[in-house]
Length: 158
Ligand SMILES: Nc1ccn([C@@H]2O[C@H](COP(=O)(O)O)[C@@H](O)[C@H]2O)c(=O)n1
Ligand SMILES: C[C@@]1(CO)OP(=O)(O)OP(=O)(O)OC[C@H]1O
Image 1 (spheres, rainbow, N blue to C red):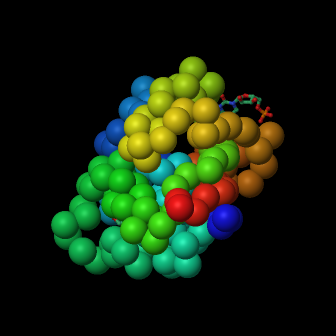
Image 2: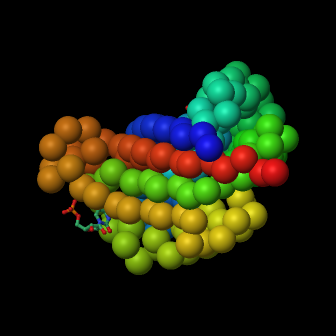
């Protein structure tokens, strides 16, 4: 078994879609980034890479590479999962949290779980997504951006 942890932050920006957990969320702001800036999928990708000692997504998909401009983070996550499987592991479970004062993510959590499970080719009951505010404290509380954190457990495939 292997454990991994991932953390990511993206700043709010105008003229961008808000995409979190592979789901387009209706909101007046999106997130800035080289890719589609899906903060949750980036945290999950880093947790998976961390669990197999493969560094982080910045190493595998550098933001200096134009081919990743506006990249769909579901595609990056699928590539990360290929690395994990090539090393002989599969998902045990993933737990995650999106940290944002606004918007409200609760209505989209099930769709995020389903989307992430589909990308990882695993069962939805192995994927958990939570959301929390920071009670108006800090950069998330001031509505400057969104943070996400994820932990994963990987099981060795015999
Ligand atoms: N952006 C968010 C933040 C929170 N939620 C949901 O609200 C509940 C209460 O959050 P607290 O930060 O006050 O503990 C929490 O259980 C989340 O499900 C949300 O949907 N979107
Ligand atoms: C995903 C990558 C690559 O497009 O760009 P960003 O969308 O800026 O995201 P970040 O979380 O900074 O991580 C790694 C990057 O290399």
